[in-house]
Length: 489
Image (cartoon, rainbow, N blue to C red; front, side, top):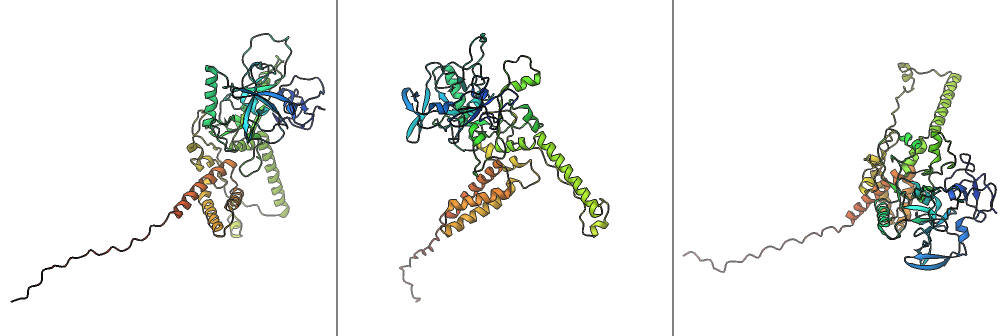
């Protein structure tokens, strides 16, 4: 049984039931995943209705898929959890089938897994984000069960001038990945997809996608992008820099950082749009009526979070309350208020006021104002100070490098001497320095990478065999003259 949920959040947009007054949340009667009808591509219902997600429907059902050019029948034994567009392969999330081509000839793709083959599935969030992002629009699109492109939903498609007001709306059934069919257009889209796979690397899972053995598609950080949500763009107004880091959508939403912890800051934002059938919308409502999506690297996700106007206002109010409480406490205790020119207070052991340093707003990584689909390791990991120049209230990552390197290298040498596990020793040192430095995820990741490279070079140089001292050279044999000395007469 399924019912409208009032407490859960949509697995796609992470908003509650009734978001913007029109989005109704339904829950799968088997797995319990909650989705908005619009986000999952369902036909809007008037009241509570039974709902079973696509992933649960597929369990135990024979499905004809395609592996390359060969059709095979596969029976799914348990609910699918692995997504082909990201590295997240666990958890109960909204899923939909991935087909190799549009139309009635399309079949659900079959992919290789460890020791067996299985049907291809994708997170609804991953697919919808790729459909609607300006950078990847056209790579993936949604289709109905008969294979027709779903032009009426947020799952992509194309322009359609036909009058379809009398046609009954159909549900979004699956997604189609471009580049698997024949033709010049398909080759162009395949090249575009491969450009993303080769030029970007997910900073969260660290997996390489450009080897041609995966369907994962990374996307570039939305920081400074032309298609960035205006509200977020205003939070870093004045900075024209572009971030060159990449991430898979699912990894950014549900993946953990390299320390194995969940992110404190939201990295993926997907807004499903509004009422498509309402022609009487104000300009502001028309903006909200469109699908909007952004994905940020860990560092810029933290900046977007901290510069939320509501959060800034709340912090200012809290600061004001603290100041008033401090003044009232001073009056109550009768403590003398120190003036800047009152030198008598200094002689009594009190410190004069000190001007605080101003924090810079610069936190950019890249140095280009143009958005590009390629990246370079030299740009990403080249300079720690470039990614940390925006903070003056704490030490930069560059200032920690020598200290971290020396400590970890000494720990490794000691562990070798005591015959302890080097992996455990390194993991403990890493966790210790991550907490001690209080750097952001991306800053610490770059710091740790540089420290490891330096340690590797240092250890390698120490392992080089020392040149053996050369034996002393043998003195040259001096031939004695065979002539006998003549005695003087």
